[in-house]
Each structure stands twice: as C-alpha cells, then as structure tokens.
Amino acid sequence: MMMLPTGRERTEEELLALLTAAGLRLSRVIRTGAPVSVIEAR
Image 1 (tube, rainbow, N blue to C red):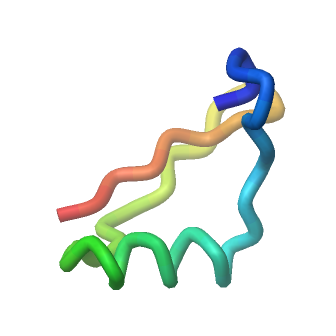
Image 2: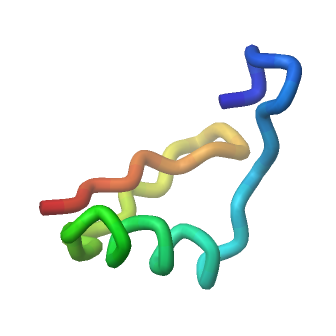
C-alpha cells in the first residue's frame, strides 16, 4: 500500500465501505507486532 506514490492508510470506515462495495465482508483482523495488521475478508 505505502510502496506506491498514491498509497495511504484507510480508516476503518473507509475499509468497510471498500469491502462492501466489492461484495466482501470483513472476517477478521490479525494484529501483528508491527504497526500494520492483516485484514481477512470473504
């Protein structure tokens, strides 16, 4: 995401809207020891 010139972080609301628009729903969020998380959607 942040590797591209236009990359940016999304808010939780933006992420949920994006998933919904794609016909997906959030399954879980896997927290890591780093400042990033893994998002799983179905």
